[in-house]
Image (cartoon, rainbow, N blue to C red):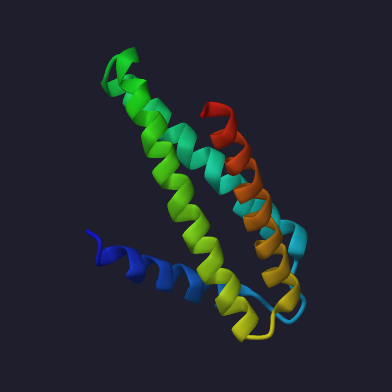
Length: 113
C-alpha cells in the first residue's frame, strides 16, 4: 500500500503537467486544489457515519488529519515539479495554499492543546 502512494503522486503530477498549457488558468487550478480536500474529508465522514455508529466519527476525525497530510505532501511535490518545468505562477499559488493550510492547522492545534 505504501509503495502505491509515490506511484499515484507521480501519475497525478504527470497528468497535471501534461494538461497545463502555455497559458495556465490559475483560478481553476486553485479552486480544484482547494475543493479536493473538503470533498475527500466529507466522503470519509459520510462513509464512516453510514457504515458505523456515531461513536466511530472520532476515527473519521483522525482519518481527516491523515488526508490533510497526504494532500499537503501532494501539493508540495506538485509545487516542486511545477517550479522545475518553469510554471512559476501556478507553483506560487500552490505554495501559498500550503502556507495558508499550515497556518490554519497550527492555529487549530494550538486551540486544541
